[in-house]
Amino acid sequence: MEHGLLWLPLLAIFFWLAWQGSREYQKVEAYRIWADQFERAKYDIYSVLGQKGNSITWGKPTPQGPIKLETFSLVDVKEIYLLVDGKSVDVENPPDKGRSIELEFVFSESADPVRVPFTEIPLAAEWAKYLHLALAS
Image 1 (cartoon, helix red, strand yellow):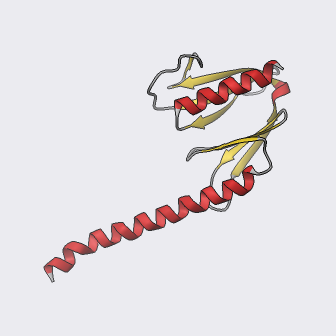
Image 2 (cartoon, rainbow, N blue to C red):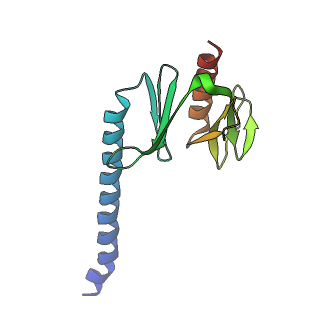
């Protein structure tokens, strides 16, 4: 009886982990279907991002598909910054660590900037470099 009570929490943890894995798989599959419409796309646990021509769309991933989608044009973007812990950093020489990683899109008009969260600094830096090139052309 005592041994069964000791294994019960482990069994509960196993089922919880299996459920979490299933949800993450559903998110990735929903993203894959959503990303087919874009030339370039990224997925991580914080956000999804897609580019098609001058149009950038981003939102939050869920098992049912991305939600809170926002779209804007690169034509309207004045500057793109890589922010690590709220501070702008050089995309050619980004830091190794950071708690908060975001790409900030500043618009030429007085609109509020858009901040897209990332989980990895190298991925955010690559997107920043790519979008700088797209912005320049």
